[in-house]
Length: 246
Image 1 (cartoon, rainbow, N blue to C red):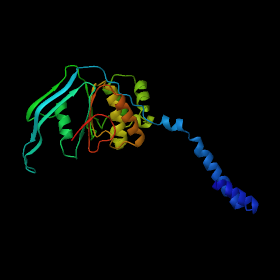
Image 2: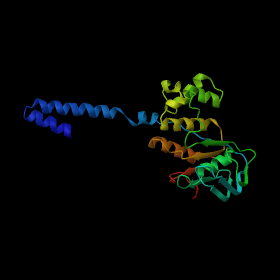
Image 3: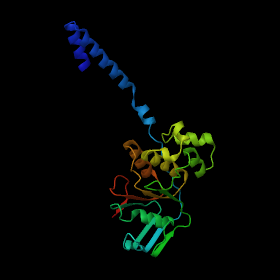
Image 4: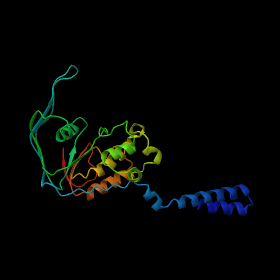
């Protein structure tokens, strides 16, 4: 409307400046209209998490304790005490709490990266676990993105390149080291690795951190369609339907 008004006024009063401004606005609007929705949609990462049928009882935690002993700079800290948690195939659980509440500690206990102070953790015999780390600890920062994918799964270089482009990485980034990526790009790389694990049990620690809104929507849709068991740790619960525990 502004462009039309400027053109009318310019022609009415024979004002070349107004006519020129009106035509410039029209050209900018035409360029904006050419950026149509299908183009924008092609720039969203392509994330699919299948999951497969495994053990009915995925995880059974009973009376779990975790105490970090005293050190020179801290007192003894009990992070978990008497925790019970039973997860079945296809179940979704959200662990919600502030930073430092023990969510990441629990994940590392389940993965075997930490030893419990007491209690038992039993994972089903046909369960394959996929892990998304909040601080990207699963990534080797000295590897290139191409090496990262081919280390996770033996595929050809062309297959790995095509796969990474689905997660919005450029050809230049694919041959760069992981340490050169931004936080959001490292998050997308972890998502790419998750889809390669063929896991039927996912542990996701703050998975939406650093992701843009389009990627958050893609992740939420993928998790809604995921058929395996799922535990998401978050400070704020946002999105995936399931049981929530504080």
